[in-house]
Amino acid sequence: MIQKYYEGTPLIINLSIEIGKLLGIVDSTYLRKPKTHLRKGNRIKTIQSSLEIEGNTLSIEQVTAIFENKRVIAPAKDIKEVQNAMKVYDNLLGFSPLEQESYLNAHKTLMSGLVDGAGKYRTKEVGIFKGDVVAHMAPPAWNVHHLMGNLFSYLKKSDDNLIIKSCVFHYEMEFIHPFMDGNGRMGRLWQTIVLMRENPVFEFLPIELEIKNNQEQYYSALSQSDKEGVSTKFVEYMLNIIKVSLENLIADQRRTLTNEERLLYFKEHTKLKEFTRKDYLTMFKNISTATATRDLKKGVEKGILKKTGDNRVAKYEFIKVQ
Image (tube, helix red, strand yellow):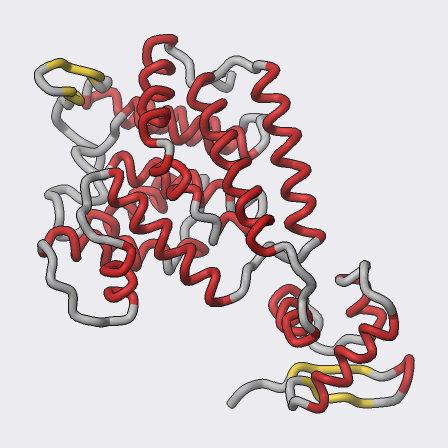
């Protein structure tokens, strides 16, 4: 029997419905994979925000400089944290959200050179303090493997949707505190990796930025769930964070794509080696036949596409860049 980690509430239901609608807008407006400069900017915001929550002192400008291989004067530990996070976030598609081995490999990369035992579950007891007061005493070390096994079993076998699962995993992992260090950033990272199974847009959505901007509520939701013994309050909090992040993305990007942007989007999302105008229109249902014809003509003129045949039977192929 799969463990139930949260209680369904009207708020969870309503937020799930709203997120579903927003993902529909994302798909219909071709935002699943934002433009390159936006993807880079959001990745930087994600890393800087997640690390700042953990006490990293580097600014957006400094993190950007590290991305661009420029010299940064800052504590060596803070720079190392950014460099490790870059390696992990650049390889998000290489991790399997349902596998513990992949999860441990992510921690190994994220915490390499920062802690002993990176990539391994803790073997010591650990408590989280607020001043001199114990805010949370994690489960005993001997039980970590069992608890994490149950949590991954929930990810694999539960009928809950992936968005809910990602929120539950985030909280329960924080509660178990399976590592001596890096638990917070691993919770946020793995939630993103689970969410990517639901929609590719989550690879580049800076949810961590919204958490940083609502950090007090983040810790309050964790604390409330601790007291209640279920992750319900945290699930509600995180669903709202996801909703707001999607709303912000849509507000920033809601505009008409140029013909070149449509061509690039089609290239990145089609599996067809050769395609017709009809194939192109299947992806872009809200443009006219005349607009599709102009897009494809422009692609040929700019050396992006190679055309064979004429009129409706014409076939197109993207020219490989040497």
